[in-house]
Length: 191
Image 1 (cartoon, rainbow, N blue to C red):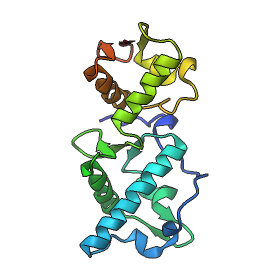
Image 2 (image 1 turned 60 degrees about the vertical axis):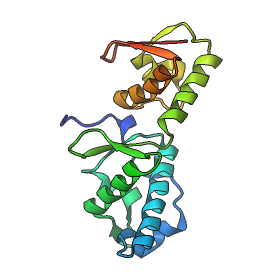
Image 3 (image 1 turned 180 degrees about the horizontal axis):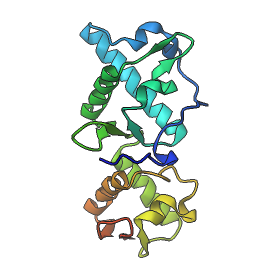
């Protein structure tokens, strides 16, 4: 586990331009409910809110250590916030949903990727971009797919490298690309 701070493109902002749904201002929303049917609905609402928030900010990674202090998980007007255990329970729910909408980056469950699009949907986005920009047959580096001027404006810009590799695995399985190497400088050839 790295102790260095994450780049700004990997984490959600602490200031927020996101428009929250009405239930974000409902005090019981911040306490996980004991009734199973109510809890399932609450977890589903949190999952949808998290995915919408990450999509709005075009971010992908949630470090659990800072999550309770983020506007997403708190409401200063209500003086309410989710505790770390509740946030983990929500992420566990998201990780076991079909399809999964979150996944932990390691077994210690301290950081999660938020899948506001499924890996298959991301793969389709990248494949469309490759087609539209004439990149078939071209070898691009992982870095170029994540950060270069050519991809600026694309929703996946700044996606964590390991997350992007999971997306590319979808295209590999479909026979639409091949990945060469295991480091950031590795290449991807699209067919």
